[in-house]
Length: 272
Image (cartoon, rainbow, N blue to C red; front, side, top):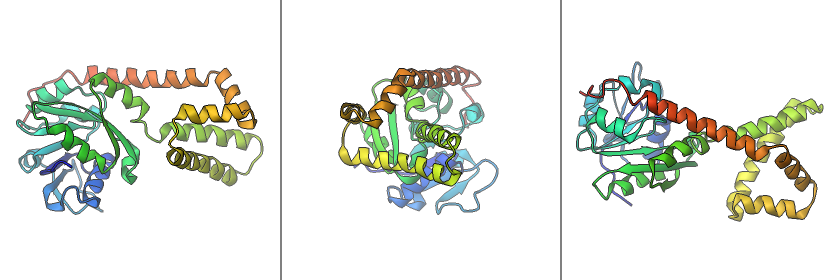
């Protein structure tokens, strides 16, 4: 495992910044005195035991690795000088080049943890541009405490993963919501429908992990059995299930690219 130096999280008071910070501390990947988090207006009432500041310049001075965890819409308000430091963005729709111009760093990565980082079950793809060969190992170690990590070789893949994995629990929750609404329409009690739909998701994830099969293999095994589940799967496929999912992912890609275009402009020399 790569040695992790001092880490700073810009936006450490937000839900994702807090989740990353908590994972770093809980796994002892970074000791509390070597982790600095910044907040915009108010320090969290239940602040983690690390160094807190409102001054991003101080955060940069205290850090060797800087994680940018702010809303993409707030990106153009961020002023930080990070020349010589490793800068890792967890923002959707902000390109490596835009981050380089604004921060002054030539060691820049984009990573996309999702909401499951809060419980250590995120999937985090990352892309890095750096002359330091150890930076990829450092990023893998940083986000390994949040769940599974993979390096990708194209920044375009990050834009795709913004929708596919960055959405985290949203897509399975959408499926569960659809099942719950159908159950309610058929007269089932709400508490029973909700519990059933949630347990389907929980059980499916754990079974998938336990069996080690690919999703395609799991689907095929049920279809080949030719039972009630097969009938449901075939009906969903015939009614455009795959096309609907593809359309949703395409919409997420387009949104990410629109954000990237928006965040490529502005005063890129605003560093302090």
